[in-house]
Image (cartoon, rainbow, N blue to C red; front, side, top):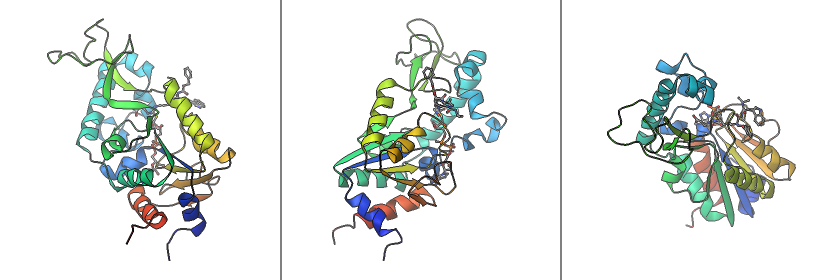
Length: 248
Ligand code: BV8
């Protein structure tokens, strides 16, 4: 007998379109601090909004660049965990699968997820802070932050900061998927930051079965059809195995 509700397993098996939204919690078991935890150690005296914002970069580009360099090294040395791989497995079992992530750590792509929407960018990409085009620092550039080889402006991480719009195409694609899906999984996110946090709400309004996977309560919990309490690295593999048992 599976520990999961039979109606939930049936909804997954019959899903025409499965939409998944992930947040930092899905990478927690890879050792990447969640967005809130990232403010530990030497960064403990800052709030995320203090650093992940254009005003913070304008006021102190060196400090913001160094925070991202620290996080980039953490992400590069991290490995995808069973939660990431379970989502790759799920993608194989449903006719249409859309994964939208708020994470900038690149772990879904490294795990092998194919249909991937990076709502908030990617920490391993760098752009010119003036031209907003992708560019790599020159190896000999010792400035912190390094300078754009084309125009000399400071480089910045290719991520969406507070107060900045999400990439239009990514936002539109995620909105359309949320409105079209039959089942929506909201995994490892505090459901506090918009417009990403609106996606499971849009799925709910459109009649989808919304499932939250998170050890803690969030503003979505009481609206979700199922709230699976626990770490994604344990729940997702078990849920995938229960919904699509390996052929014996
Ligand atoms: C914008 C990238 C408009 C950078 C990030 C209403 C509508 C629209 C906007 C707003 C609105 N109200 C307010 C706003 C403004 C703002 C906002 O939402 N503010 C909040 C604080 C209220 N939104 C914005 O500014 C957005 N932009 O709206 O622009 C616009 C339009 C046109 C023109 C100009 C402007 C941009 C927001 C994006 C900011 N960038 N990240 C970077 O990474 O450095 S946000 C960042 O924090 C994440 O990406 C994520 O989105 C957010 C929250 O992080 P989570 O992923 O949820 O992680 P968190 O740590 O919070 O929680 C972890 C969860 O995991 C917890 O629940 C925990 O229990 C759980 N967990 C822990 N372990 C596990 C686990 N779960 C499972 N398994 C485990 N093992």
